[in-house]
Image 1 (cartoon, rainbow, N blue to C red):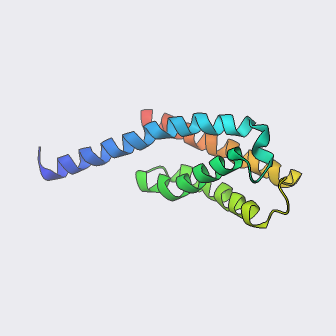
Image 2: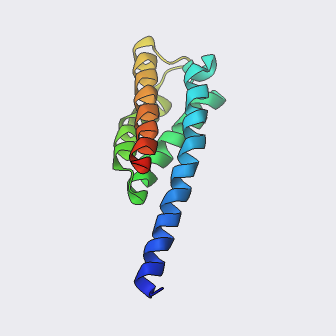
Length: 119
């Protein structure tokens, strides 16, 4: 195997590892979506979904999953805005609806990446 083939195989392996991590992330997002404490901007659920969205926004495109990065971007921005601007601990109803909608869209995008990778 030549250098180019080894390099391409290495990239394919890294992409597959990332895809495997997306499965775990998707499962975790589904749990966080249903967590009642998500409505508090200082909760563990809020912090965790923020970290997930921020990391996916920054990394997914690098590994060939642009739709995941695109779906994570607005969630990342919303969560950062809530984190910085929210008065008190409770997230407003409109923001919470947007938050849940964006989480659902990100879950769908991640799940779609499994289908695309298999096909």
